[in-house]
Length: 589
Image (cartoon, rainbow, N blue to C red):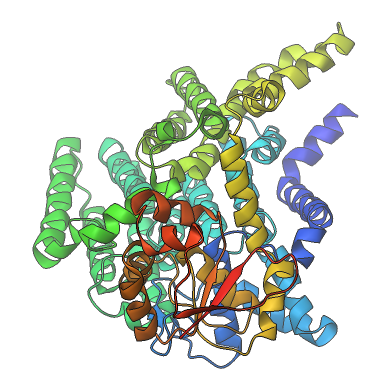
């Protein structure tokens, strides 16, 4: 019986993984049904993604990604591509004849984020099978479901690009560990090209993957097929991504997306690596020298051709960086976050790194050593990235899964022994809670470690309430016009109402962001002039929203602080709103 079950798990693991994925999707659709019905797009990027899809379905050009509802009438260009729009738009087109446009949007936003989860689960399963044991792949699924910030990127309504990029990262690791060298190299190259087409967030991991493949070839000339396939897939895939998905605004020398800057760099990288693979000298020292020379040539080309891209890719002004970009919460190092936030994020990556390092040592005389070395290097790199920006948390948790699975698999022989099975059942649960890092969140919840202060709770409540459909829907009773409101409120406002807004938290919208900051932080006369210049006719405020606290802290005598204290101005006329509305609105005279 056990043998047949083991054979089934081994032979049909992909089918069983897909079955598990279908069950997980059904569970989260049921669990989060209310959020789906209320279109709970909690992040500004999710709202802008839906607006981008709406524009496409309403006839906006494939390569035109300008959003005309923010900073009208000109609008602003965003640095994204259409690639992630496709599954969302496809689901809406498929469902709207059946359930109508509004419900089709809700269902698409619920289903689309879980599509890349299937890719990630299969890739994780392949990695765990190759490195841990052929029957260990279910541990990958279980550990994936125990992640915190990583799993959150695949949840209903999280329709932005992060889930797809994490899935491509999982495919990259699977390709590096693939014993079929050419297939593995092609997978890494394709995953990198897809990730680049979506955005540059995974650029450090992509660079590391390319370095690993090149150095593997230096160490062992038999890795030549992997290097050749990777080079072809990287150069060709990036070119295809640029041709098929790059917007008009990205066809200039910008540094923040797949523009001619990164297209030429990736095509040159692919060409240099292909040349190395075709030559493939026998002596390892010669291969190393050629690899170093190719890397230096690539770096020199980038520095000489695009010196403007040697700094921050966003290329924002010093003022905007100081007042906005440097204060973005997820861009801060993990140690600057409260313990209740940081501890659940870092626990699994540290456990996974320990497991990967131990597995690498145990496999030092085994053919799996190269794969484990890759996982350990990626895990260490991701853990260090957390010291730079907390936004590395989802990738760090994803990359920790193989190492944590290796630690868990070491306990399996003892757990399967016939003696003391009842006690071992409890031991298995306890081991999973520890090795998955779940104990960190349990400890925080149980002991209320670093619980948020009442002031923070009030801000969170105000922010959350203003972003809801019940709060915003009554604003549609006011004739459509341009509203001057907070930067973080703009994307949600244009998504849920017929009103336009001035700014969203996107660096290419930098001038408009600064205008909003200046209006709220400077004198009332300057505020009125800025609002008039943007054609705004309504001032919409959400008191105690997180963004408003910045204005009060930075400019205690500024326009917003004076308005929040109850001061009135002749050029602002209160606009009656629905009873119980969390907003305050004023007509701008």
